[in-house]
Image (cartoon, rainbow, N blue to C red; front, side, top):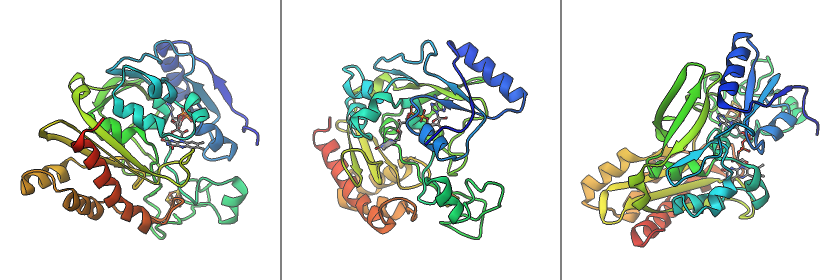
Length: 325
Ligand SMILES: Cc1cc2nc3c(=O)[nH]c(=O)nc-3n(C[C@H](O)[C@H](O)[C@H](O)COP(=O)(O)OP(=O)(O)OC[C@H]3O[C@@H](n4cnc5c(N)ncnc54)[C@H](O)[C@@H]3O)c2cc1C
Ligand code: SF4
């Protein structure tokens, strides 16, 4: 399949990238950032929401910085997997992403900014035309959402990235750069419950770095993932947990691939710890099951994915509170 016509830009510095973004914004010309291209290039080839310009981050100076606490947006997933400085939980999660070949091109920035996915949307152009499109890529037809029809305000496409919940339980933050300057926030505040908008990034803004607090390096944790084929499939459900051994107040649990956002379940954990004076694996797993309601838009049926929340939560907590990694 061929790429649609579009202009590719190659800034060498972040200042150049920002100037380009400002210029295109000013001229009203739409564009996308491209990092490793493992998600966006197939989407472009399938003519899914393409733009006339693409700005590559591949040569931007400083974007591959990798220390134990700072991870640049262009750091490859395989570099995280094999790093001996990043938190072991991130190494574990990275090793479970896609296939070894994809991990060599895919980046942390692209993984966190991954487009949400839906059975009715991630299809070839002819396939989508045959069902008269859908709300997220309606091609000007005003088509309905195929998952929750008769509303056309909300897209419930699923976020299926693996790194986010693991970074969330380590209290990671993200640094965003845009034409209006820099801002920093918790990763758990970055995502938006809307399968079309996905996250808080404004037009022209990019995710520049991920910051893992020094204090989180002492946390231990575990990530449990459900997928169809272990060799390369997207997560159909994922649960991460981490704590500072012995300190229940530091326990964090996050989920992915079950809703439009990866979600940190801080309130649920806090309430559970208050009511149970510690963690009851089965009770907490039931509470997670009640809190998360996947919809029917990925490979496996939502009822099965939801039932696996209990299993994955129990497994993750047992490993974390057992001895963790
Ligand atoms: C067969 C297959 C299996 C896969 N399995 C998994 C899996 O198991 N787990 C998983 O998590 N993912 C999976 N993926 C999805 C994807 O490959 C990865 O998530 C990857 O990390 C995306 O990174 P990338 O650098 O290739 O992103 P790109 O494709 O370059 O970009 C992805 C999106 O992020 C935006 N973007 C990229 N970088 C930035 C930035 N710095 N700031 C702002 N926006 C940015 C782009 O505009 C685009 O919208 C799979 C993909 C394939 C093709
Ligand atoms: S959830 Fe609805 S609007 Fe969103 S991609 Fe799927 S069918 Fe389209």
